[in-house]
Length: 195
Ligand code: 5GP
Image 1 (tube, rainbow, N blue to C red):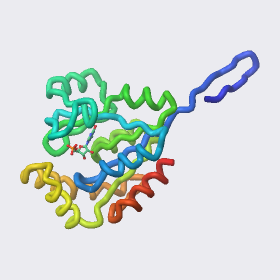
Image 2 (spheres, rainbow, N blue to C red; image 1 turned 135 degrees about the vertical axis):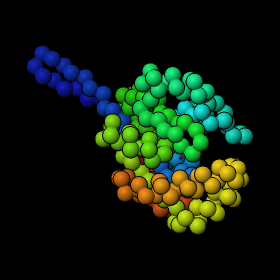
Image 3 (tube, helix red, strand yellow; image 1 turned 120 degrees about the vertical axis):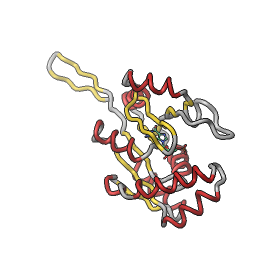
Image 4 (spheres, rainbow, N blue to C red; image 1 turned 45 degrees about the vertical axis):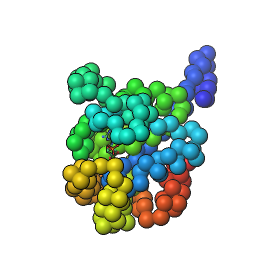
């Protein structure tokens, strides 16, 4: 926080945090990179998204996501509570405006892990946001990673791979592109960008 003296008026201003947006195709390793960044940047807070997707095994409401119904999601849209939202793969995902603003105003940096459509909406509303794209070394490697993790159905893997091509085409709109061919180097690159 800093204090600015202007004659008799004393103005207090909080230093606001910085917003980082991490995107990249499903299976590229965003989750691991995100966790590494959160473990290594004490001032960085993760914003938990809302989704209409059903929880996967091991996921808990309020931890990975806020799992909400379609009607609740619709209500949040009409009340303009989202900073951004998008239909991704087969479900809706969105970031609550109030969560992000309150953390930034408290002086914390905030990390969003969201898709490309959402990231571009954020950049339009908050041009100071830093957009970081995580790319796979190749589409072949991404295919192997997605089919190998066994968290999604065959149909879902197909949808995710199709969307990956579209997302990769938009990576030039990002401030930084990290190619995740070596996890340790990718983690270090992300840490440097954030710090
Ligand atoms: P998953 O279902 O695998 O957890 O996530 C699917 C995709 O949705 C990922 O690309 C993830 O980054 C994206 N996503 C997660 N939360 C949000 C969000 O709040 N907004 C948007 N636009 N995308 C999100």
